[in-house]
Image (cartoon, rainbow over all chains, first blue to last red; front, top):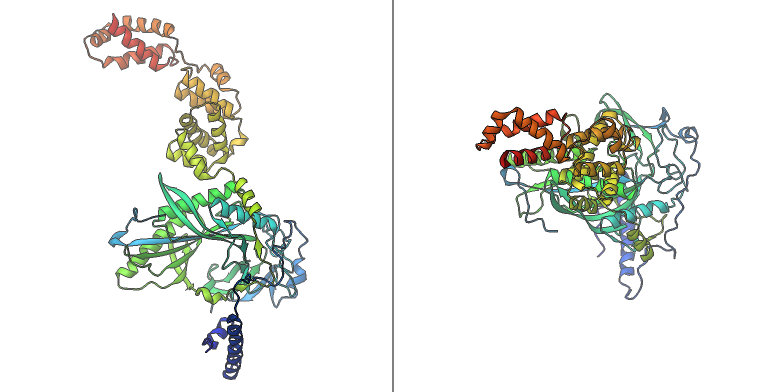
Length: 94
Length: 493
């Protein structure tokens, strides 16, 4: 009954390398979750205002004002690799 | 929004279908979700904090001024502003944002269903606006290696996150555009709208405004063809060229029996070609979901009405106003792109000067002089009252139109008011009929042969006689009056 999930595709989108056993285990878990969602969806919700956020608040803006930024050295020193004041990462495209 | 009436076809009967996505960086003081400066300092990674570096536990808080900016853009584009809109996470694997996702919008953008009326070489054309949504800009990646900055040949990449988190508005059109010229005209008009609103500096060359062009071709009446998305278009001219190239490339592929691959392509300014970057990820590959860190946005009716009231005169209205004042279409576009000159025009016309003449001066001599001296009009002494005085002198016959141009450049250089300049340089022309009559009579006496010919119906010597009068008066007679007097004297007696 629940939606058929291509668990390998989902894992690939999240760049997760899962073993056959993990694929099977997570597949079952996701199916359970979807099944639960389906039960919730079956509830009569006529006249219930849709909720887009659990908090009864909107916006929560801050004024357009500047605050202190960090010293580059303070975070670049924590990076796996840095060069000329920038983060250095391996080549992006294979 | 019917486009059925005008569907220009390309060679082989192909119709191009074009939609544009435009990104505009808002010129707020601080970033979209944190207080780092948003003006992107030169020194790398000097405008970064735990939020825009995605350090654990950091929370984004939206900048109210940025929301104000996007509401104004949506309003100017005639969109419906959604009462409630939502922030989403757009997930992707590319290191230009340290969070591994971009905060953007998906369903319920700030604004949707608008339109922008553009002008394509004098013809009005309407481009539908699908949506206007709020997001954050990415960091800057520098690809290092032998490939001259090309990602494919890079050995490694350096990342500067100063731009990461700068407020970015994306404006998406309907696939209404059919020609490269329309694409360019849309880009130009959108840039003018954004500049008129004052929400962004909209500099294409600096990347604070940039276009992505979705292009496909089809036989008229058929379903849309497979589209490609061309990036890295950073001038209006490139936009037109890139779209034109892509249309021709796709037609060539299809006519040789090939198929178009849905992909992202890169515009190369130097070669004038687009090249494949990567196959386009499907929309669901981004695994959009609502960002739990951010509350829903609410733009209530009071805010929406305030945005409508705060709208400045938009370029479409200004264009109509210029043309109604007699300005020809090409000069009207020049005024639209030069707000300081447009302001002088507006003031001069309001004070009674004829629009066509003033626009000719501003878009002719004045711009030429500004370009020569590499200055802005505010750096010169030219004022709208100068234009008014100059126009009335020409109108009253005190100044020939060529002398007026000389006076104009002198007024720009601060030599005084037009009348003072004309007097000081002996440029005033004589339109006093009495003075001219005297000279005309003398010239006729001196040239009896010419007079005889004119009297016998040969009008050719009239030009010669006019020239003689003008020369004797040192070029300062109003030629129109001279001709009138000549005709009267030669026909009359």
